[in-house]
Amino acid sequence: MNCMQARKYLSAFMDSELDVRTNIEVLEHVEMCGACAQRLEEQRQLKGLVAAHVESIRAPEGLRARIMASLTAAGGRRLLSWATWREVASTEWLKASAVAASIIVVFGLVYGVLLAPPTPLNEGAVRAHMAWLGDQVPSFMVTHDARKARGYAFVKFVRKPTVPLLDDEAFELVGAVPAEIESMNVGHFVFRYKAVTVSMFIFEGLDLDEIAGTEKRIGDGFVKVDSRGRMNLVAWKTGEITYFLVSGLPQSDLLHISGPSRAGR
Image (tube, rainbow, N blue to C red):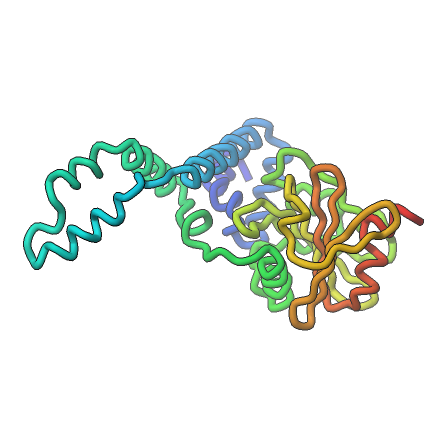
């Protein structure tokens, strides 16, 4: 794949919208081409900038109430008073919204950033795990190559965190995919352990308090444990990186392979 071909796919690659083969071809090109890697990083930063500005925009206090009052009083006539129209059109909120919306449309971010329904982190992680089990993740890279898996899963990350289970021979790497849970970039790795599938989700800058569950102390560290149906979840934090295991394994097994437990051996 050359630069012209790769750049055509960068936006879809960043949003995990390509098929597995094309994803791998783009990834391999970006790893070897500094110019395309820089272009991908610029698009990633732009997406983050737009998302940050969209989240910070607030309509003026009372504007909704005044609009609704005008609609109620219209009775089939002009829906809004000229005063209300002038207020809407002159607000910095509307101008900022228009700019942000234009950028979003251009870069195809509406679906991923604005329309995805909010779900708790735990439910989002379980859904992502179940999607893989149901073969519903077309962009998933099937590979036993740890280097390729890390490069692919962390393509949206500022830095490349460690993946503890990659260094353990008891775990067979199945593959990886870059994902989003609650609008946060996530590196999703899939392993086989004791003939059972284990998903490891890796977050940057996520506070452990944002994860639902019961806190448990293990050695010198803490973990969060939770259950959703037949799935068990264990999460812990190391520095600025939060690790989240989801599997049908017993919770005792997940606790045994968690970071704090491994560190105490």
